[in-house]
Image (tube, rainbow over all chains, first blue to last red; front, side, top):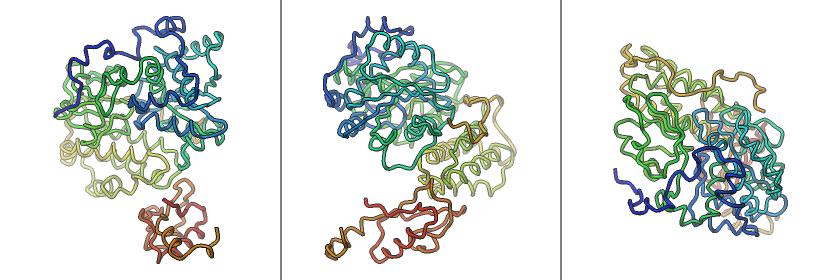
Amino acid sequence: MTTTVNEPAARQTAAAALPRLLPAAPEDLRAHLARYGPTPYRGQTGLLIGDLEASGLTGRGGAGFPVYRKLAIVAQARGRKVVVANGAESEPASRKDEVLLRAAPNLVLDGLQLAAEATGATEAHLYTHHGATPEILRALAERAAAGLDPVTVTITQAPPRFLAGQESALVNRLGGGPARPTFQPPRVTEHGLHGAPTLVQNVETLAHIALIARYGPRWFRAVGTSAEPGSMLTTVYQPDGKCRVIETEIGAPLNTLLTSAPQAQAWLVGGYHGTWLPLPQAAALTLDNGTLRKYGAAVGAGVLAALPSDRCGLAEAARVVRYLAAESAGQCGPCLNGLPRIAAALAELAGPRPRRQVRADVERWVGPQSLVEGRGACHHPDGTVRFVRSALTVFAPELSRHEKGQCSATNHRPFLPLPDGIPTSEDDWT
Amino acid sequence: MTDTKETKETKAAKETKETLVVNPIDCTGHGVCAELLPELISADEWGYPIVDPRPVPPQLDREARRAVAACPALALKLMRR
């Protein structure tokens, strides 16, 4: 596998030193100011956007959309505008936003203020995961006491639901409603919170903005690939079950992220809307969409899990899909009807001697002519289909064993992390 | 904008750019659209519409508008690309 990783010489410059985002210990406002100085405002709406375009920064929340474009749309709009730092991190396997909000809350808040200046927004929100970390609350209080921020930041907690961080769900929640997605268009950049053009950026994206505003696009591009520059935070599950948040350059070989010994059979790349890739082949790949796309995968929000060889991949997939089905907002027919059936089918495939009909059913729901994919208001059905489709491909040998009444797993403890109780109430979307 | 002011050509050109779009949140799977416009809409195994993503051909324009108007959930729309 050839890659587009930077040549070694470029890596040795100071600009290329990682980590960029995560200090060794959490930094309060005083430490932050000592290291970075004050927020580098440009003094005018729109001025930062050219630097962001030159930097090539893409959103780190999962969709990977060019950051400058969203800012430009909101900057061009008239009237009241809103910026939102999205730290909902509603993917249960992801930890990177929480770690960032603990370690470098002021970098995120700098980025939020810079995004407000660049777009001309007069209203700023911080949307945090359930149970906001004390560090971010303290940082907000310290900055308010010091009178640092031109735009007041309102904090709102996301409900612990998988879709709570989706852009339109976030806007609904900030507007006082349930955190459920709405049908787009119009996009929230045109018609967002209470109708105002709204810029929603992942908290890691904002931290990168704060650094690009200080050090410039060339500095940013000193790591990463030319098509996908910069570094990114990843949440990596090693085969021994340990979870680490690692800042890595985009385009890094996947095998450099594996640190522990037990043998793994497959990588899950991109979290629960992501793609299973078989090992050892996947270890030769690099962490960038240019490479992963060829294998039907994407970096997403940087969740990577190496499934150990002693587990049953089908059983793991079935657990996750049961969760994903329960996390459907229940608004769109194909998702409401399809996901529970896919989940039930996978549960049967994960057991001994599944009926033949079950495979035909799953094929109809997740195959090339999927009855579910592309038919929801949000991408929940699409992401779930991608996850299931790749699981059935990668774990096809295991499926053959199950059809004979066998299973290769010697360890039946769950591996991939899921919330403790699956919510059943209709009312816990706020 | 009134129809009389437009030439037939410009009207036809506009129509070919329109596609049927379902708002899947509003859609309740009544199935009226698939009944009225089987050429472009079929029902899935749960009764929800699967819509042809291509532009509506001019000869089906009237039927498409009828299906849009008949949707009890107001979930079917003609959208210009």
